[in-house]
Amino acid sequence: MEIKEYRHNLHIKVTITTFSLSARSFLKSRIGLLLATAMAAANAPILMKEALTLTSVGINSQFINFTHVTMESDKYICVRETSPQSSVVVVDMNLPMQPLRRPITAESAIMNPDSRILALKGTFKYFNFTRVPGATQDHLQIFNIELKTKVKAHQMPEEVVFWKWISATKVALVTQTSVYHWSIEGK
Image 1 (cartoon, rainbow, N blue to C red):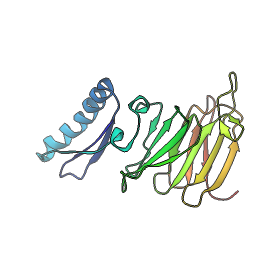
Image 2 (cartoon, rainbow, N blue to C red; image 1 turned 30 degrees about the vertical axis):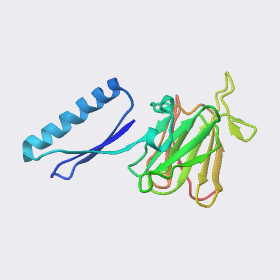
Image 3 (tube, rainbow, N blue to C red; image 1 turned 120 degrees about the vertical axis):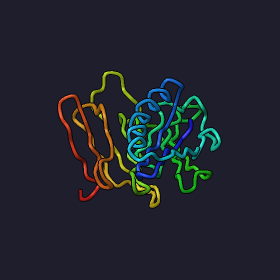
């Protein structure tokens, strides 16, 4: 996987995470239209720089895809590895050569965009997450990685089909019928 930055003097910064040739082509075409429009107006050059190759920090290439890698901001990359042992790897872009690897099984993992807080989603079984066939409920947990503490946990009444940090303190949860905002503050 490559992380590339595109910049020009209109102060637009776009980071593209490419996982495959088709994804790269799609993203470049969409971002290219945005940048071409902005450049035409400002007549500005584009500077492209590779920030990191995930394989160089020990991530197996089989896990570099849309189902295993999340990037909620330009600060962290989160990778779910499922073999030989299930783990979550957090790459801090300020210290990219020191990835944090934890033995965690989850269906999805997303890092807080501002701080070292990790959100996990999956079906709960034996303190790890494993999808139970036919299960329609998701268990959500939020951990403070620095303090090594669980911040919050919640069992959803239905399956979460999409989730995303929408601020430093809130996660948006989308189900088949509803949209929820879950705050990490309070009880």
